[in-house]
Length: 265
Image (cartoon, rainbow, N blue to C red; front, side, top):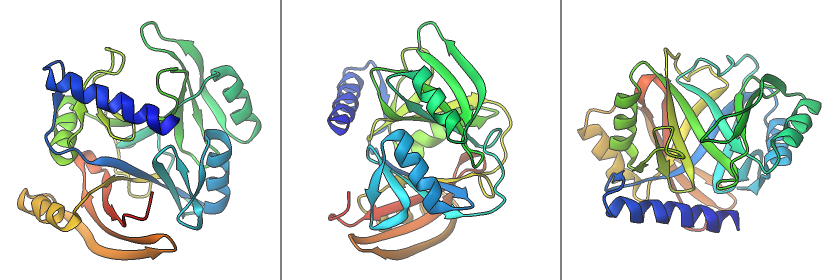
């Protein structure tokens, strides 16, 4: 049901875009995954599955599928907390914010900013997970589950334009208030003004988008002057093979591009 709602929301956004209400990039990539750095990947994957409705995926215990987005954890003992980084925090929407805050606090999260009701948006609060990832928990009944990625940039407009150029998406304000980009999978990318440090070494290690044909995308990026850090490389899981490469994204964000086998979710 959540996946159906996500598809419907994005389809409605595209319809509005075609009518001129929004601006859309012609080639839109699906948002694919978040890669987090933690001391104990299976433990962190289980924590996110428990609290945000994840399920096992790819036959691996260090990852969980929340909606249609993979949360993948790699081992890192001393990752820098994400707050203040190029990718500052991640957002989840829940039916009952107060109950979720109590639940998270009881299992190791720290409430860094208590609940507040924002007129025209929704109730929200900020927590830090047990491994230093800043999370925004919102009560947005129109969009439950994994909700958004919040970036930091000294020039938010330039950053949004860069993401549109790289990955497409629908440029539209969230609830008419927060300028951002909506991607298939029902994931928003939002930007706050401010200095940010690179994601390398941060608890939010990198972001990931999915390509239907990865080698043409690689050549496109190279032709546009995008720096390719490494790849392409093939990785095989029990449910299929993926091909990946990594690029330097805007403002020091590392970004992985992945093509998944048709057998993979």
